[in-house]
Length: 461
Image 1: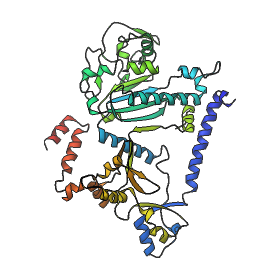
Image 2: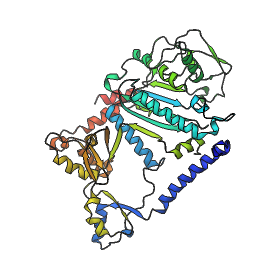
Image 3: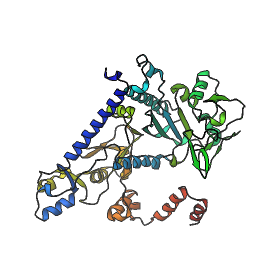
Image 4: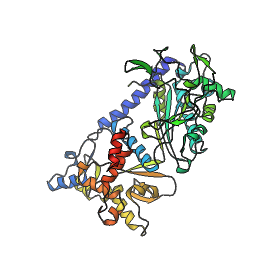
């Protein structure tokens, strides 16, 4: 009877999720004084001063990075995504998929006269299943080619429907290198669809608008430089050929066929079609926008479907392959955790507790045969970190990319240690004699988005 409560079930879902979140926060708040953390060197220094009680040292842990939505969690996800971009290059495809409340899988489960909005649990489960299918089409069926890396994020609209964004990085042999190849994956025309089911999907999901001067109150309309215009720049212009835009997004071919259809009392043509992939659109029958891209720029109150999504424990963020963060610390400056009732002498004598990924990287790498030693960032590709044993073991399967923790120049020794770890034995123990950091800095700046005049000036140096 609970799931037949209509809007009351929507409110019930939100209340249950909020209670779960409050329980997690209460646990963290009530255990701040129980579990403490401090640098190992700080514990040794405290012992020398005659202090042996752990309750008098250490710092409080406010929120762990595992708590979804907090700043450290967002920063960790961003850095993981950037590690994949650093390893495999810029994204090639950007996909947005939005839940369709009229999916047959949803309608079949609704009671007579029941609406999809009153079944957030059903909406969350079906959309989660659709995402699994979409990932399979991209990664296993390789509809765009061999995938090197993929990132997707689930978000929720103001009206509650879930949608997801995908960034796909292809392997070198499958990248799109010219505008002529765009049409193989993306179509921005309704006139090119001969399949009746696909044509209906284009008209039902992939037509933008109506908007423009005649429809100033449409959701996408905004005032810019004193003019009211579409924030998505629709309707587009007719084009006979596909070309590249200045910010690396293509300007797709949109032929003037003279064909128009009526959408919300307005007649629309190919200029209002949102780019899509015909194969995926016919399969999923929902708003599924596919864009070809080659730039990284494309990187409250709770709604009922989001509450159901969180209660079910579905992931809001997913990356392929997995990224392993790698800590960086100087000698005796690793972070260790301890309870307030422990003795500092016992903590300092516990060698197992002081082991970290970095200390074990040195010892494990030293045991490898000559010529087979790896950089710190390469280590997770060949070894797996076993947290309970605090040791690395050879990797048998899977792909994992290492990401060395960030360090700013103001941190002194830790920053320079990170530089050494990022280069092969400090350029074969020349301790960065051939240091080209300045050159790399300028190269990186040239590749960033900046005015052409500044880019030309940097290239002169």
